[in-house]
Length: 197
Image (cartoon, rainbow, N blue to C red; front, side, top):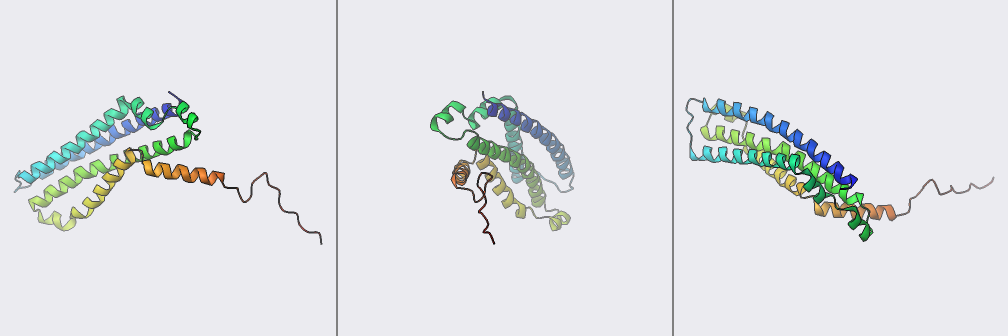
């Protein structure tokens, strides 16, 4: 394991602990919301409500799985994200550049996933309220507006969790082409002489 893989493993453990805190906070909020919903006078468990509760439970289980992978299998994921340095040197590429972009994309994907999954459980709660037709609450918030944004955030987080391969290739090519261009002014170039008057 090289230095970059060790840093990746440490970062995964930190992200796993952060995810555990997010999960515990969200579980408390979800439980309190469920208690509130079940005390609505005309509340009935319909098939739609069971489906929304199952979706909410599915996303909580997904979050638990991601946290488990980060905490207990972080070395496997760090090796996948950061390749072995000897292979990179054989190809003549700069080792740290694509690895750092992949790692940054993965971290952004995990954070976006952590922020999106609790939103999905809250949206399920709002849709349950919507299906129960509580008139006062319906006038304040309609859940359809933020559902599309949440789906887009979920898709973006999955792309970033995959390491954002197209983005990383594009950024590496761009950075390498920028580094090969001559600078307009550098510390090694001498300024042009001024004419004597």
